[in-house]
Amino acid sequence: VAFELLGRLISRSADEGESVTRGQELARIDSRALTEDRDAARASVESLEVTFATLQRARQRAIELAGRGVAAAAALETAERNEAVARANLEQARATLARAEDALDRAVLRAPFDGIVIQTRHEHGSTIAAGDPVLILAGPGGRNVVLTLPVTLLQNAEVGQSRFRIYAPKLPPEGLKGVLLRVDPASVSQTRMRRAWIGLG
Image (tube, rainbow, N blue to C red):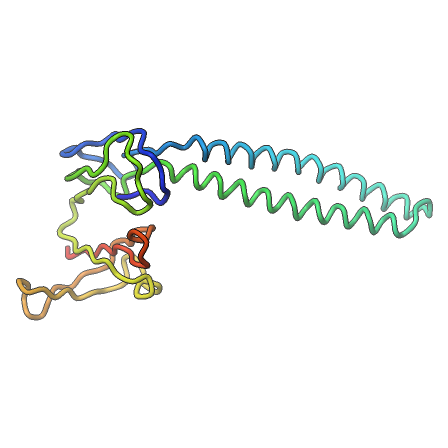
């Protein structure tokens, strides 16, 4: 299992030989910069919400004045344009906040399934590249084959649906049937390759 982000390992809560459960925290990278990004994005959203609410009221007031013939049509158009710009800015800020929260969540590495830690690769303080395995888990569900494949071959692959036939020198001539269990979210190093896990049952 690997982080999707580059970062410095500040904790690893599982060691070799330990059993882990799906969703359990395994490791964490330094997230101070990510937290600051999230807080800044949240503050921006809060500020823009106030601005948007103010401009909404201004537009409503312009509608009332235009209806009574007190204000010119140009004033109403300006109020509507200002509100539209504020709405777009607010939507963009909310999207930025969602991305910042997602990045912060990815600073924590969790077990993708119940299993046993069979190897650890990094210690506290190590700088880890995105996609570089922090530890290796073995699951209880039979044997798996791990292949490193080009992303283009996996574009239409579906977990639990895509079928494979595995051939190797020491396997039966007809090979073994397998089904796609998962695809690692991050590419291997700088290549356009990803690890695909195929369950043999």
